[in-house]
Amino acid sequence: MPDMRVFIGGTYKDNLSYRQKAYDCLRRKHAAVSTMEDFEASGRTVRDHCKYKLEECTHYVLVVGQRYGWIPDGETQSITELEYEWARACIEPGNMQIFFYELVEGERVEALDNQQKLDAFKDRLYRECSPRTFRNEDNCEAVLERSLSVWFDRQPTAVAVPQTTSSYQVTSTHQATGMMQSGVVQAAPVGASLIPANLVTLVQGFVRLFSPSVHAELQSSLQQVIQKINSMTPKEFEDFLNQYRFPFNIYHTTDAGIVELLEALTLLHFAYGDWELVPSDNTANLALGSQGDSWIRIVHSGNRYVSMPKAIFELRKRILKTKSGQKAKQEGGPLLPNRLILDNFISDYTLCEECGNRLGGGISFSFTDVLEDFTQSPDARDFTQMNDSFEGLEKTRVCCTECLRRVKSEASMEQQIRDRIRGLTS
Image 1 (cartoon, rainbow, N blue to C red):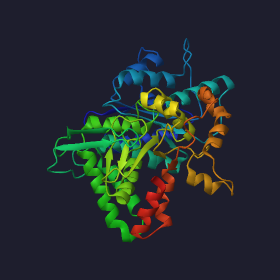
Image 2 (image 1 turned 60 degrees about the vertical axis):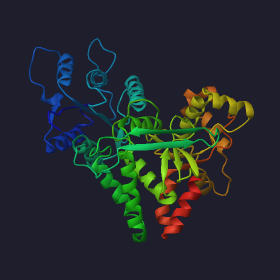
Image 3 (image 1 turned 120 degrees about the horizontal axis):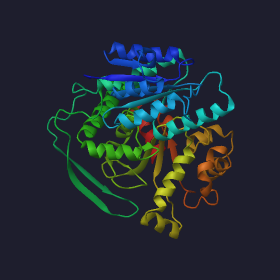
Image 4 (image 1 turned 180 degrees about the horizontal axis):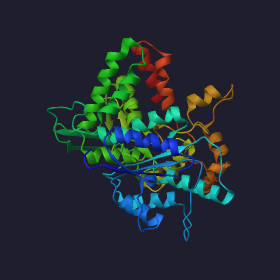
């Protein structure tokens, strides 16, 4: 990408080797890189010079480790958190992508007051962004390469797109309301791609993990998924992603959850033969099969350390604000009548029925028991208003994408794989 200037921020002592790896990765791709270590002598304070250099940049990489960092005189925030605020102000997330990396291992070295500030800063990053995580130097380079490459690989040379499609029919009939929504929307310009080629390559590697007997069918499913996405308008795909990525309707990095979405859609297309977007519905965002055989809501967590109940309670809150949600509550019906497919959530308080029964040691899985346990945990401090009732959630059905991916080792024949995927998602 021409004229790319990247500012690498983060604490120094605990992150030197990781920051160096980010620097090396960006320089291999011929980006101009700026770090605090490169600052030349000037009449400015460190604070002002840091802000000045950051405002010259178009991209920002932040590495957060086990230190909160130096707090300049007269400030209550560390220079690292100040950098982040300046980046949010001067780097537009729509076309200047921001990535965050958090180290999850290492000695906790901060004094108590700074440790509290560090934890609060990390919580803020999780709420506002989609941090990538690496655990050690071996893992670090691969994570950096994969994430930073998106800036350089989102070019017109990406994947093949439909050459004749100029519009895309979106038709949906909600099984709860019976209301038909239909319309033809303009597709993206011919030759444009909404999916970077490097992400498609990663999904092709996932396909090869299955039995060779189904490689051709899965590869064909992947290509059809890509064609269907590329036939959407960018606005339509963006609206879908806003309801797919959790937390909803906040800024997430451009490629967050895209690989996982392609993997899931490839398997669903393989099993059902087709799928369509369901517009403007809190209970479902995909209709599976040519006749809408099964409706699902697929949700990807931008933060690997979010538990499933948080997404469930957020969906419940959104649905109860709608007329259909109020009607379902009054009639004692389910608020989430369609299967939920949850991706990239932590396994603590899992609501996946398949996982719950497998890990339960013979104890029958209970969705509401898990919610009850969650509301008694420190992790539920923002959801105390939900403690008094799980009304409308009792019949919620959840499957995690790990169970979908596990099909590759559970079945080898084409029909067996299709049946297994349908059994998990219907």
